[in-house]
Amino acid sequence: MKKSILSLMSLLVLMAFVTSCSSDEPSGESIFVTEEEKNMSEFDKWLYAKFTVPYNIEFRYRYQDSETDNYYNVVPAEPYKAQALAILVKSLWIDAYETVFGATFIKQYGPKVYQLLGSPEFDSQQSIVLGYAESGVKITLFRVNEIDLDNIYVNLTDAFRDHYALPMDLNYWYFHTMHHEFFHIMTQTRNFPTDFNLISAGKYHTSDWINVKDDEAPMEGFVTGYASKEPNEDMAEVFSTYVTSTDVVWNQILDKAASESEEARDIILQKLNMVRDYLNDSWGISLDVLREEVLRRTEGVYDLDLRTLKY
Image 1 (cartoon, rainbow, N blue to C red):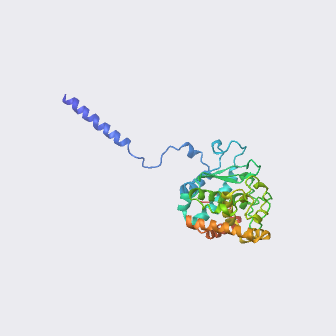
Image 2 (cartoon, rainbow, N blue to C red):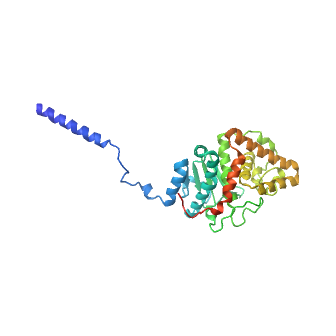
Image 3 (spheres, helix red, strand yellow):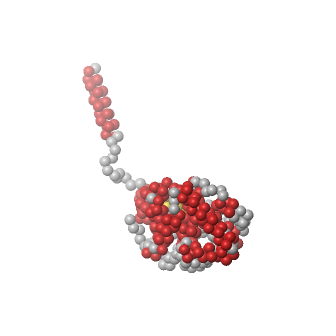
């Protein structure tokens, strides 16, 4: 009986020792590499370091059915062109906002997902969809495969340049679009004053805005043809157009408006002031300081190496 008790005690001690050892945390990195880690390209690692870690942003460039609207036939983005656009987004969009407002602003309010697609989408009126923001979380950008790395071009001089002319204007197709979609995220987070809706009430081209040309829109008090669609797009276009336009381009828009009437010019300026006040009062953001930083970075786009990932 005594022997049995001792044997039982020995067994309990051994079990306790084994249990305590099995609960110890590993002292170093795991020797097992996950399938996801094995499949990460150098570009994936760069995206993780530059977008995910500092800002909690997922940058998706691989095609996923669940991430696209199956109503449209679209193709995946070519990786090396997706890489170029990622470098542009980081330098000209994220870094601009971080420089002015800090990394916390981007982490808290920036989109959580960027989705790239190689080809465009066309809406019901057969106009090209430049991009869209979903529920303040995700921004999708199109036409990535049409980026020509040997002919990078940013239009900073002509307000009414043909958007389909070559070389492709990155300012129109991407930078303008990113600011436009982000403004939607901001107004989805903190409401824009409804008084804006009254400025051009009765003048919007809800069903035929596609027929309003950019060089005609200012004469009706809109900065672009798309701005004439409805108030939400109008205010986002005022923001994105002003932020990405040099004084030369912005004055061309105002001069075109004034060629019709001083009232049309004043309407555009009234809308701009409302956007400026909204950003200042609701977000503590200076529209003009942001614009200055965006333009400074945009003018330096030709100095960027879009083929090399730099840490």
